[in-house]
Length: 104
Image 1: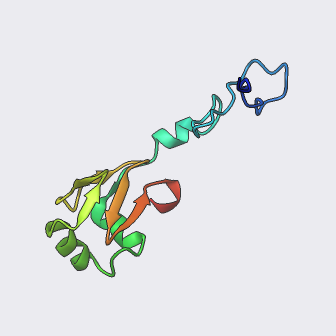
Image 2: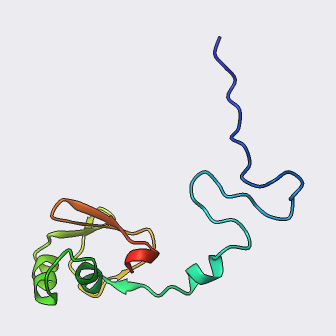
């Protein structure tokens, strides 16, 4: 027979029932920066490519996007002004970049 699996220990001290512990999947607990995450404005695809040094200029971004060489979440994207949100995955030249707070 196999071993019984035990749940992982809670990241909060015992007796603190007022807060939700962080999940194993990176979701944010109550009382954290959820309000701040809602206030983050989306970034346009062309800007994202330039800011993350995936292209050298806006003109290059335009050519690659319109040439069907950029994917967003696994789908070819041909709109330079496509709004990217947290968690979107951009693929260009075989590189995958996840949109997060640090690269927006």
